[in-house]
Amino acid sequence: MTDHKADRPRHTGRRAPGGPGYLRDDRSGRAPRAGRPPSDPARQAAYEAIAAVHRDDAYANIVLSDILRGLGLSGRDAAFATELTYGTLRALGTLDLIVADAAGRDVARIDPPARDALRLGAYQLLHTRVPAHAAVNQTVDLVRSVAPGAAGFANAVMRTISETPFDEWLTRLAPAYDEDPVGNLSVLHNHPQWIIRAFAEALGGDLDDTARLLIEDNQAPIVHLCARPGRAEAVELADEVDGQPGAFSPYSVYLNGGSPRELSAIHQGRAHVQDEGSQLVAAALVAAPIEGTDNRWLDLCAGPGGKAGLLGSIAALRGAEVTAVEVAEHRARLVEHATEGMPVTVLPMDGRSVGRDPDLPEESFDRVLVDAPCTGLGSLRRRPEARWRRQPSDLPALTKLQRELLVAALRAVRPGGLVAYVTCSPHLVETQVTVTEGARRSGVEADFVDARTLLPPGMPKLGPGPTVQLWPHRHGTDAMFLAVLRRTA
Image (cartoon, rainbow, N blue to C red; front, side, top):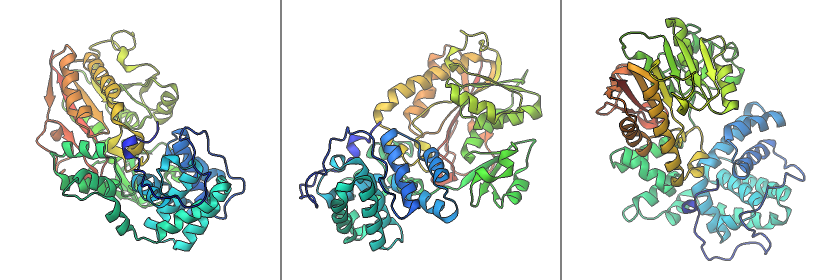
């Protein structure tokens, strides 16, 4: 996907610095790799990651990790490259407005390699302590290596940006709050307007609270670990990794720094990386009381395996077995790896095949988790590129799939059993609307369980129930939604 057109900066009508030859159709192909590398490998790593995100629809966390290993970067250099990559991707909307104004043309008409280098350079000028002359010179060197003919153009644009403080850029480019509050918040806090409207609707129309959420979305999140029950205790794991126990989940540990890839607890299968909110909603399914049998659990959308790993650990302690379904084969392999040594059977199939496949018979499971595919708007802190990649047009297909999976889950669970519907999005269409419509269309009778009672006591601002919406700015978690239904007939 490409950036949403509504998020692209307007053409200012100013003459572009530099000579002609720097305009090209936005449908251009791959950016060329560097002819000669710039002097700073950290900036080179960040540029390659940003270019891959925009050129190949790559995921920043995956591609950056590979690039850092390929360049042999670690320690401070890796940390700097990470800050530049994630910071640039978070701030992309406002950076593009500023670059466009300084260049006198829409960023869509700037050669993609030069455009990504200018985004990276503008971030350094406006959001870091990198001296202006270093940011300008390094960016020009980078552009010279990836788009040689645009070096003079890049020099002029960077110098124009450096002449105006960031606050003045915002004053110049953001509409007045009184006239266009959503437009103002979009420029000030780097979120597309449609996402801001969706957040505001989910927060009851409170724009002040929405602004607090946007600010939190732009903060680099700390890494959360999940201490697998029966294999590790959170307090002991926190001491081992020099972290601290989480605020709410009994399995959560906050990592103070460093790469989780290097932790022995990860390699030994005693813990895995998982946002505390994801832990809470998965654990809620098995926290609810249930009558009758309780030994067959189903994870209907299991990839990449974080929730399956937690459920499998708990199942091992309770004498239960988990069936983990994942339609994508590569993600099914990830689930197998994540649940190794646990009472988990991984089925590479479509979760909607309940009742049509002998491995997924109707009315045969005691507890079912539907961690439905969604827009991921609740994890924008961790996936900064997602805010610019997702579009409103993604919603119809996703919500149709969500409803179908919930219907399948309600048919898979036995009468008296429980279904937890979970999304990492607060968009009301993906949460309240989907769960209500899915339950109505399922053809089975089910009642909502008050999900607030299934979360640890003392959690603040859980709302009126029976569903729960977690928030980064209220709970320090991803914006996970949880609805729990008990099938009655």
